[in-house]
Image (cartoon, rainbow, N blue to C red; front, side, top):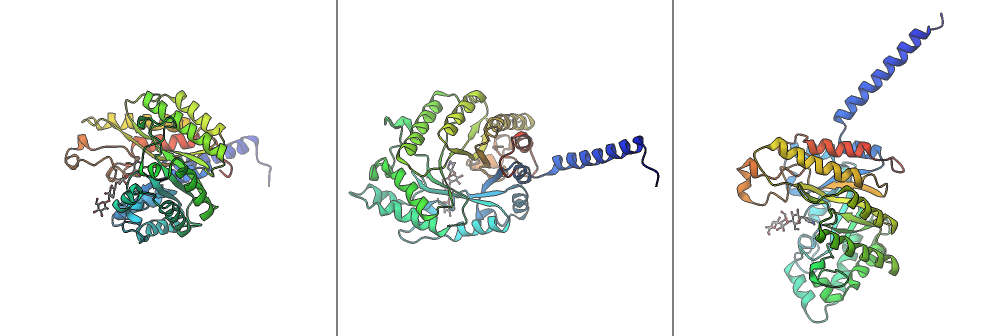
Length: 368
Ligand code: G3I
């Protein structure tokens, strides 16, 4: 057979390239967030509830887009131990099973929080000399129950509140009153012993902008993380909830500096509850652009740090968002929040594309 001419070779190469490019552009158009994240050695996921399991189109979108799942409510003590001493894992187990059946990582949220505790627990913590087993017994039992099934635990959630006036910036919550600042250390040591394979996370909000109240929170969190290191507390990562708001004083360099401080202390970071609230209005397209722009600028910085290992949005679709709390918003589209990647009809919004672009632009992590 006559050797191929240079022109034929070049033509063949070009058509192969254009085919690959075509495939790539087709891929780039449709590849779900979980695929894009995996390609970079990251993960993308969202929170969900078993209350959504009856919504087949939503569950289909969830299985397509999410590579990680976290219980929005059903992993909290108010749901697991509504009655003292009776641990009901039924709902959280259904979510863990869904995650396992769909190849998703499963995040545990949350073991020790000032909020969403059953009334009996708050009363017991406020009594004289509460037993430490109120803390260690629960953490041990829950982490052991999910041992080997949880990628990462939000062991303590929202322990910082500088407005409470303590020099260490800790929130004056029932846990602090009952056991002092050591409650955090005890919680992390107990969780580590119960599942050495799970990543242990400290999770909090308000660490995103240059606003003075957020700067105070960032300062207190750095102090907390430094203390963990000094005392050998087994906390592995910082979870930034990232409940953002359009029009806020978000500054990329300020966030970059904060993340660099966290990284310098040897912690990984996760974006754990990303959503973007806005101020409503009739111009839906403009609102969606503003939400997408802020989400994109935030993730551009967050994912540029190789120590950021994943992004979780606090919901997948505007159909189910905690921000939609006011009943009347259900009838006035202009007032309904639009904080998530899919709209209430499960269509990909500009925010979805902004997240996809930020993931595609992120540096590869090991394994990606
Ligand atoms: O489902 C029960 C229902 O059976 C019961 O009758 C009713 C009685 O109050 O409660 C229902 O549970 C509600 C649950 O959401 C499920 O809808 C709880 O009352 C309600 O407090 C709970 O709100 C959750 C909130 O955390 C408090 O746990 C929100 O869905 C959830 O989006 C929100 O998420 C938090 C993160 O965990 C931490 N970061 C902030 C974020 C937003 O507040």
